[in-house]
Length: 180
Image 1 (cartoon, rainbow, N blue to C red):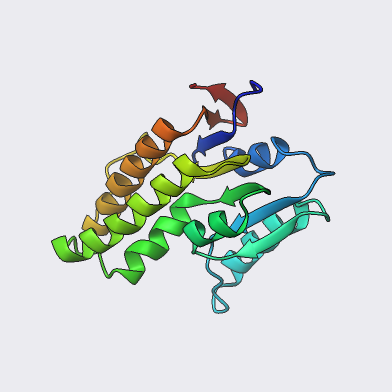
Image 2: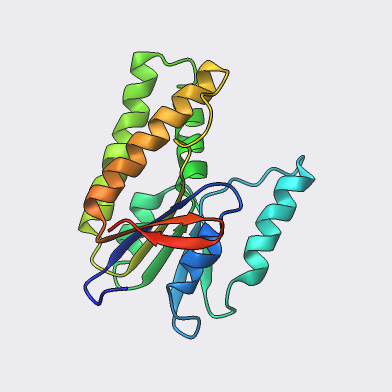
């Protein structure tokens, strides 16, 4: 990683190794705020197991913050190294909260304002920041309207974040490819 890289976007598909790679970009022996965006679902043991697996591999000295308020977290953590995992689950929550799954323009505008605020906050983040997001644009066209909406909105978010990040990586089969 070049010394000048402060903001890194790590993209990848399911089980590509993106989260583990992103974690490896930050020193295990220094303080890191690990911002986890996945909402807990007590009625879904498989989801709970996934969250537990992520928690168990984090270094003991890292502080985990489970929140969807990324803009607020960036403001509270101006001097800390931050790792956000992941933006696909964050966007899912934003779309849920805005009731935007049917594509209603007013709901999409509410979600869009959240995305705008996030991109702006990432661009202004003064400390070391590593973002993890799913790359969903390489697969088949989703069969449902909500699936296509999610793919399109996440693709647009990833493209905007890539513009404000110093470094962009794509993980394929566990291998990082530097895009910038």
